[in-house]
Length: 141
Image (cartoon, rainbow, N blue to C red; front, side, top):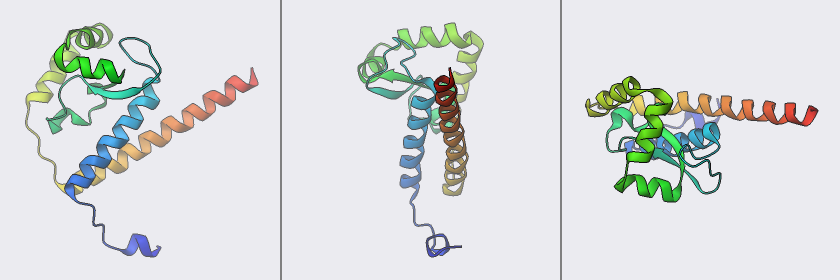
């Protein structure tokens, strides 16, 4: 172990929440590559079908999809297009289940946030590797 690993982790709860938000956003943009509602590829953000205020769905991948910055902003005032896309893509039952998860309060301890972050780092690495393989395969064609 190196010195950094031996030092006590001083990341605060707020710090872990911020790290989780960042990595989920990166994963979503890597996974989707374009806006789910318009197909645009510029200025992508991580949009949440249900608000980030609920930790129960804040980092749930089914609740997070890529949208442009303007679409994400518009979703705050007009959730219909994104909601309709979700129902068409995943079905009403998935929407209802996700909503049920959203309204169910969940509390995370700081150590649970850290564990979730480590799991998401693995997901991100997997997506990056798949992207590299796909690019290599395209180069062979």
